[in-house]
Image (cartoon, rainbow, N blue to C red; front, top):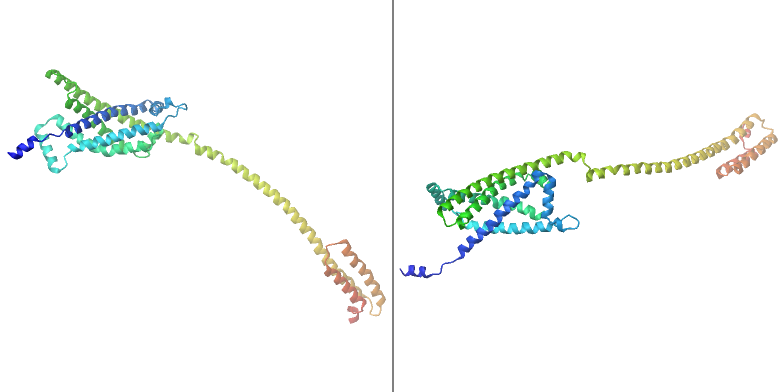
Amino acid sequence: MESYSIESNKKKSRLPARLDFLQSATGLVLGLFVWVHIGLDASIIMGPDAFTWVSKNMELAFLSDTGHGYPIAVFFAVFVVFTLFILHALLGMRKFPNSWKQHRIMKDQMAMMKHQDTNLWYIQILTGFIMFFAGSVHLYTMLTHPGSIDPYLCADRVVSDNMWFVYLILLVAVALHGNIGLYRLCMKWGWFQGTDYQRGREIRAKLKNLRNKLIIVFLSVGLLALLVFAIIDLRHKGSEPNQPSYATQTHETEPVTVEEAPEEASEAESVHGQAAPEADLVNEQAEPLIEETVIHDNAPAVQESEPAHEDPPGDQEAVRKDAADNDEPAHEAPRQDAGSSESEEQASEGDAHHIEGGHGPAETL
């Protein structure tokens, strides 16, 4: 009894009620944001131009002189939504069954009562768990790429990055969780109920009907938007080879460089062509020198040897006259050809001296 009196005298905490109110407030903001977000994404159904117009207005392009907008505005908007998303998830986890025993109790109660709103609350638990992961991926992508809200970039992200599966799961979870949550907020806080019981029942039936229709509409619009994104990406990739891009423009400028290369080659050929005749001239000048040296080396020997064999040994004076006659062209050759070597002069002088000394082949014979 004393313990009971002590417990009853304690002041009750208002923290759970405040946390419930905060959870409802964040859920209301996020639910309305889901409506707006799906409606803006549905603009892709009307074409890429309509989606571009919506995205530019979200970036506050009407405040920019250039019309490009401010992607930083998208960053702050996504940051606020992400913060509310994490806060709402943390507040909702307070009521999740955190053990297998609590889960079994809840399942038994659902089977016993067969109450529609209780079943909807269980659906909210499952969809909220899915959204915590899929929604975090989507929000993080938009937080790190605030300037990528473009119809073709979004389409490429859906198809090429294989994000269509994540978006499909997120679409189903958001459509169920958001609309069910808004309906339960109306029931929890007594919105649109009034004081008349009969009037309250009619309004509740209308809210259920509206909830179901909104779920169907959001699922249909979201699926159609994903399909349009996929079609845009496939068409854009199929038309890329026929459209001028940065790569094709760069490729078209390459022949200019190729044309310059032959010019350089022609210049090199002209240089080589000029160098080649010079080499031929050198060779042609060298060949007569070699021929002349051969002639000068051999001519005296032939002219000297033939008279040595033909003249009799006693006719020395005739031999001396022939040698003198042969010495004159031998001395004139270096004057005519300045490129003859000293060895040729020494050879001619030696031959003349050899003939004058009388040591030629005639004496031996």
